[in-house]
Amino acid sequence: MDRQYHLQRLLFKPTLLLALVAIFTFQVEAQIYKWVDENGKVHYSDKPPAHLEEDQTESITIEESKQKSANQNQLSAQERVKQANKWLDSQRQTQLQKDKEKATERKQLEKRQKECDRMKKEQMAYQRSNVIWDVNDKGETVYLNEQEREKLLNDMQQVVTTACSNL
Image 1 (cartoon, rainbow, N blue to C red):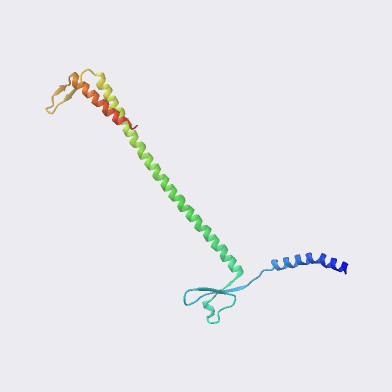
Image 2: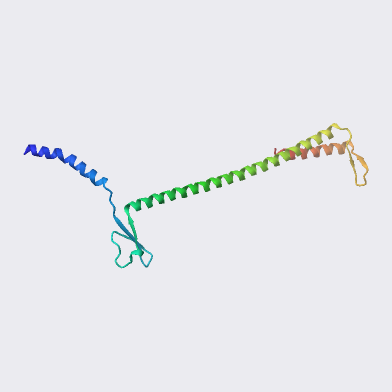
């Protein structure tokens, strides 16, 4: 009896393993039926509904179900790619807008810098000259006296300082 017990015990594991392998390697095909009732509710069953005609139900095998699931995952992946592309496009548009704004700011800064440089040159020219003159409304040349010259130079200094301070 002890020998028989050990023999059964020894054979039990391989037999169980063989049975499990056989069960899991066979393809199981079950029929599933899907239909929508008059209220719009979707129903699933392993038996077709008796009250509906065959064309009102959809028959699905498990293998088809796996394929549909794979297709849905693929569609989901395609949707994710579309969403990612949309996001990338929006990021590119945002970056392009920022680049345009920076270019506009750069142009404005260059314009202000040129104006500042022009004003500084004009100020230096006035400082170097001993005589400053202007043309009045009558078209006559009017020379500035020393006091008017100093006032003009001070006013120019303030204008140049203000114009060039933001650079």
